[in-house]
Image (tube, rainbow, N blue to C red; front, side, top):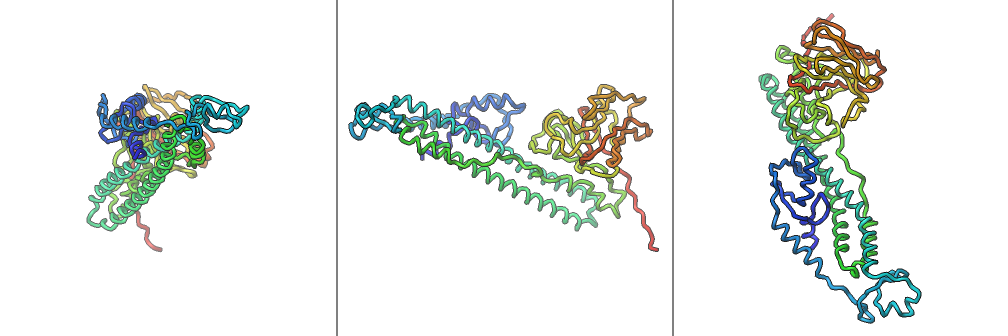
Length: 464
């Protein structure tokens, strides 16, 4: 009964029994001080466990939990100290040589002649500190698992949102082609459903495994913390067993959110119309670059067909998956190139601030992502070229292009930018591109940027 009560009174942020507990609308509870400290580090107020946003500015105390705290601590303090079984005297000393509690009579007996002693309180305090140091590792591990589990919970929810959104977009595309595309639609829906079920199942299994690890660590932690709250004599009597329990507790490897855990939306939506264009070429378009929504910054919104982007003021509530860029307002193409020549046009229009270029596959997506990025930047009316070996070179143009062509010659080691309308050369990078390169687009202006679709044509060659 005490174990269940203690489980309900544990704050997942500080790993201790609640102090001034508060409960959010999502029913998760925390210490008032712990939650306010966490919110001070975040731009938005969200539950540290389930990531649901909270509109509460001032938190109200949870009197029920506070009352349970008082009951818990009263139960923990109700123990009475045992006495010496031989002399019925208080066990006031701890023999360092025999590692046992003794009374004042035992201390002066021949059995403990020339032995070293410490007061019970001092010996208990030293060993409490020793056990607390060992316990910190378990607490830190559980805290990390809690955080990753929270990310997994959010990812699992986002997978469902992605699936629902993708279904709607697929249906809208198929609506235009409905009269002869029913069979094709069902095939694609089945593929999406299969991926959703597969990745949802994988995430559920990961969450289940993390929960199991949390429970295993929690049992040891709670049992140890109960020993730490016991009286000194009782604590010292059970110290060895408690220490062995902590030291023998298996420590799982540090968990992390796996790459590729989200639904590959680009696979389902990218070039969807093109793949079925044979008889409907007037109704479809083909984009040479499909943007990957799983890589988009939370303040970047993509069009339904994943070919244009715009920056918004409010951050979207998205998982911080490994593929997602978190520093620049940018997005990466869904497919990379490791050989051959590739080109795409980007309609920048009157956008006042943007970046176009390519990025290596290995380049980190978190923080400043310059080490593997070659780019043309337009900002404050000026053009600059930047690369891993060049922190910035000015480019002079007579007029601002409305559309810019990006051409990557992977084998020839050239990345060229030019005005699509006038063919005016803007800049060419020369570099030996040995890595897979991905298209890169960024904007912090308020005008959408769009990858220009290619014209689709059908030619029929007669048989010889």
